[in-house]
Image (spheres, rainbow, N blue to C red):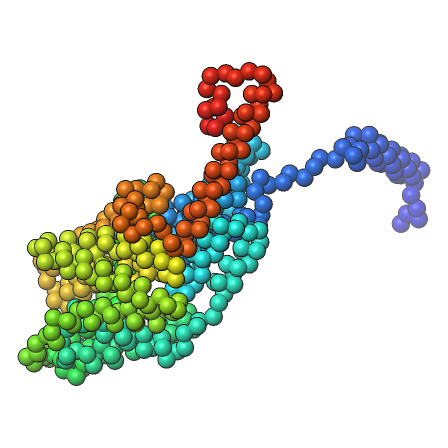
Length: 509
């Protein structure tokens, strides 16, 4: 056993340590010589747009998606707000499931995104959201302050008590039932099923598993009650209870917005909304099939002879729809009257189309087309809620998903090989409503000041609503900018002592 290192080992060990020390000293000297002095350190690269503004725009985009706006409309609003903050290098790509924001300048580009939830905001939250947007357009507050206000709006608690939520869905179901099947024998079924469906919806808010399968569970429960007690609830005709009972779950807004986006070239957003809507219809129909299979062989019910309640019943149904929707969706105060005006206008257009022998398709087109200009006229009043608040209930009342559910349920319950025409008619109804809304939106578009707006102002006088102050402020800002540019051009000409032809127009451009 060796007691120590030998002479050769000690020599190699010492040479290795000296070489390592020399290398370490050389590396330190090279690093100190090549390091930049403290005063020449590179400055940190700042983003071309502040992070606070990016957060505000992303969260506003997601909130607008949840308020029922189309993706094209959301992008237009975000572009306008970015220009209000004197920012031009921000670009948006809006989808129903999120908002992409790209910031670009000479140094490169960066992309950020924010996911959107699939639930819809309450009407009071939608009203507060658009009031915040109007405030941003008028005052241009700091982005962090506006973001804090938006977070407070989205986190606001439910202002409607539980009993009013239950009553609202019951009244809503009865109102739609009076429009579709105005018979006295079905009133009890509308009341019971509307109450049961609202209880399921409130339970789904607490239990995630039930929330995922809510369309299936609701469809099955409604079918079990309707066909299990056909004479007591449905007056012998239980199939007519299905659509009014699940009316609050129908994807009418998704289907119509998807059709609008497909028609305007937003293929990704339109396709995703349309598939989502039809998938929800299929889940509802699947629940109906499960309920029928659980019941087994059904004894045919003989409906008693019962005439309609009268010609006034559909008009009363529209009133109940407005009351029920305002209670269930927590509409802001003093908005019920304006909401009913738009509802009755859409209902009148729908009835007019049917009276002109155009059938349901023409009625759906006219209902969607008339609702938009009337919502614009309502907006002219100072105490009126935002356009989206009064338009959404009318948008829903046309029930584009209702006929779709009826068609699917008929195919399931009756096994009719020729029942496919019902589904085709439902698709055409959705397209008719979407085209009506698209035409109505084009008539009252505020970006290019179309002829209809001038005609309305000529008939009713200048706008006195809360948007008037914003428009006037924008006009004053534009005039001041033009005056400043003109003054700068004049000063430039005086300084150079020359005036070239077209210099003023080039400066204004």
